[in-house]
Image 1 (cartoon, one colour):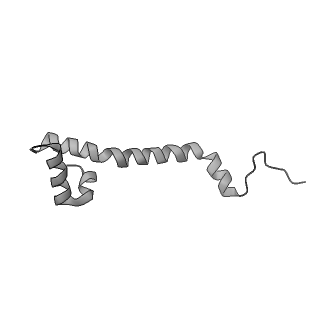
Image 2 (cartoon, rainbow, N blue to C red):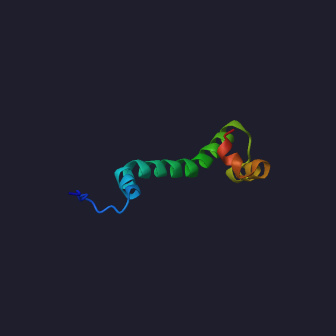
Image 3 (cartoon, rainbow, N blue to C red):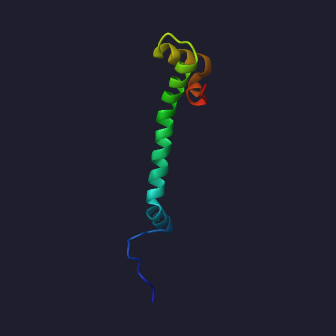
Length: 75
């Protein structure tokens, strides 16, 4: 006799996702946090260690010299 699963999963993938939903959500939140927060930290560090007239001049110079990667590189 075949046992019926207590939750209505249609595939093993759905069951794996359900069982690991907290880990998946926490990982996604961490990635979003780093991707959104790191550029601000990078600009803050550049402002502290180098001479810029303003925040906007730091952002413009970083983008002009290094492109979008400059915000994720550090100083």
